[in-house]
Image: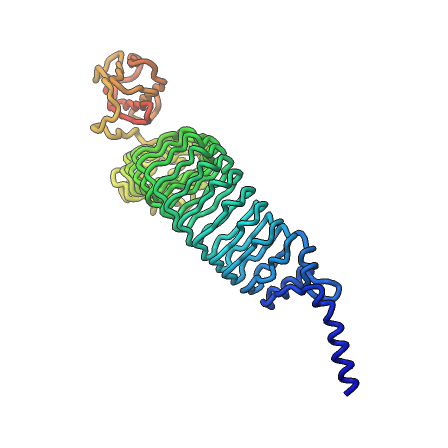
Length: 463
């Protein structure tokens, strides 16, 4: 009996330091074990308040099956918390004032409290179940990813130094980024946003607002640094990229575009404008272009002969009478990377090598189309004149006069029946005389382009 009492007394005495040191309450055994794996324990092997307070730097407990982070409040000195891929419904970090970096994605979080973390600069809370997110006090925030949640609103007006914002795949109907002049990356696609103003974001390099379905206007005039634009699956009828000469990627597919101003863009590599109502595309200086998707439009002609890097071309379902793919790089446009079907009026496709195209592309063109290294020039929209000009006399003997009635003509080109360019002139003033006296008798085709990229083609007869 005496021996038993001695054992109980010794056990009680050994527990006194634990009581005095205030052991942190950590009910989740998975969290507890993860803390031990991070080296969070004192010399006696306990996780005390003093030990937790003194722990600095990064605490990484990601992917440990944690459902309760009770006890995290004691870690007041950590600056980085990585707890993604757990099953935490509530995350309260109101006591972690030193926190600058938080990654809690993929954790089924429904409630997140970072209001007291005024030094927080990086927040990843995407792939959760958040319906509300208050970041009004996080004035140091530069990076925010809250994508794939259930947010119906997001206020970033207090986050003036915000550089990167990912908020796609939510339920946002409105997004105001006018107080974020440093914003470089904005991805707000797959929401319900009807209007987006990015005129206050001159530093923007990447903009993704695709699949909102409701955006009908997009002013990019102040975004001169823009490199990538994704605005597909919206309600745009026109798009002007004239002030975005550094675009590398342009995706404006599945809108109602009849006008795309600002082309060509020499830096463009990936261009997707499929599923629109475009009638013309100017790609004359797009030498860097690799991927072109312009299928399902109303294009009557397409010339990619200057696109020397092109390896993927999908231009099916248009109204082509002319297609020039002779870019010196056809050997790198392999089977499956070219499609020009459903263009019933297209009879000749200009290519680098007839044998190569026949061997690799015959299933990608209509049965009535053939390949040639020198297709004759095809008259386009002879009766659908979009540029108001007066061309006379026609037939012509010595001098052809071209008079602009209202539009400003910028260029005229004259082709012979073989498609050879015999005259090319930048138009100034209201009229131009073309000397035809030295040209052989026959049929010629005049291509006139105005300031708005409108094009008219007229057949000229030389007597």
